[in-house]
Amino acid sequence: MATRYWLKKTLGTSYPADPSDVLNTKRRLQSQGYYDEPEYGITEYPDTPMFEGIKRFQKDNGLRVDGLMRPKGPTETQLAARSPRYTCSRCGALHGGVFSPSLCHRCWVK
Ligand SMILES: [Zn+2]
Image (cartoon, rainbow, N blue to C red):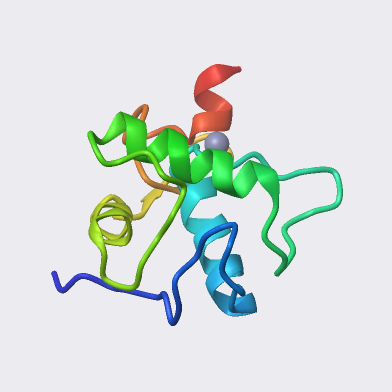
C-alpha cells in the first residue's frame, strides 16, 4: 500500500500551521491513541495536546523528540505507516490497532 502523506507544510510550535495539516494530524494522532480530544473539540488550530501527542509518538517510535513534523519527514512517514484502519468491534470507531486490532484505545482502556 502506498504511503498516504498529508502534510503541506512543516508543523511545529514555531511554524505557521496549515489548518488542514492540523486537522489531519490531530485525527491521525487520535486514531493511534496519541491525541485525546479536548473539551473544545478538534479544531484547525495547533494546541498543546497535539504537540504533546507528536512528542509521545516520536518517543514511542525511536524518533527524535522535537514535536516537529516535516512533510514526508520521519515522523509523518511513521505516522502514515501506522494508520492502517481497523474498526473497533465495540464502538465502531476507526483506529490504528495500537492496543488491539479489534478494540480502539478508548474501549481498550475502559
Ligand atoms: Zn471503541
